[in-house]
Image (cartoon, rainbow, N blue to C red; front, side, top):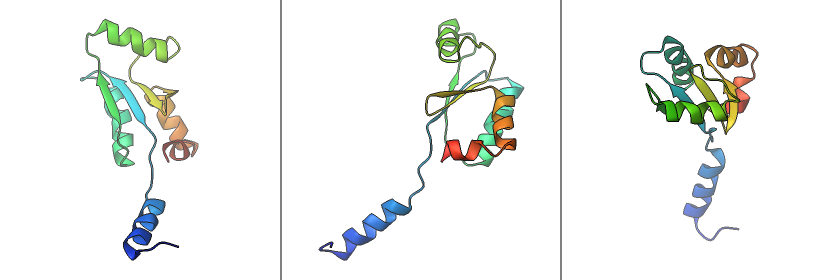
Length: 103
């Protein structure tokens, strides 16, 4: 039992709040595949951390290490799990497997 109604209301609000996964995307500023991947995330109203690595070889090496050697862009991670590139993201969505990873 809660002593105050305000505490009960706060507890209910927290229980009903939708939590989202941590999404990261490595991109180039003029990459059409990067724009397409971000558009899908934007349509789903998913917040993401974007790393624009234009010409930054050190950042690209870090990305490649996380992405099992893949150096193409974009590279997308959900909760530190490597998803792959734009086509991989859309394939997950087409199979109905993306939303469960994001929620």
